[in-house]
Length: 85
Image 1 (cartoon, rainbow, N blue to C red):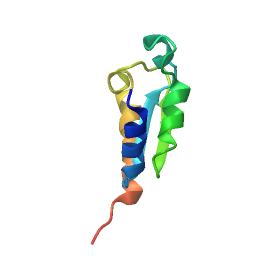
Image 2 (image 1 turned 135 degrees about the horizontal axis):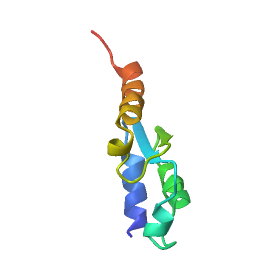
Image 3 (image 1 turned 90 degrees about the vertical axis):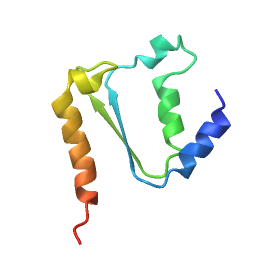
Image 4 (image 1 turned 180 degrees about the vertical axis):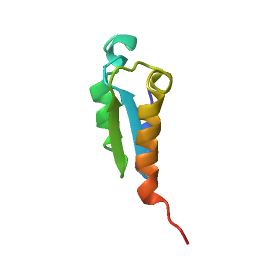
């Protein structure tokens, strides 16, 4: 849906981006093959500075399924970027 606009928005992102996903591919099932995890990853290539991490043993609500793992990924992602003046 409006792929050109979406990719333009992705290209305009200047902040580092952390994309956290479950290790399984539920997108293909949900979208019945019209949109896949591979499509999502291809679109993310438009983001200048993106890091993709997968969480094992988690589904769509990965922050509920594996909260400690999600928190650790977020903390590790932001920690090196924190600047003390």
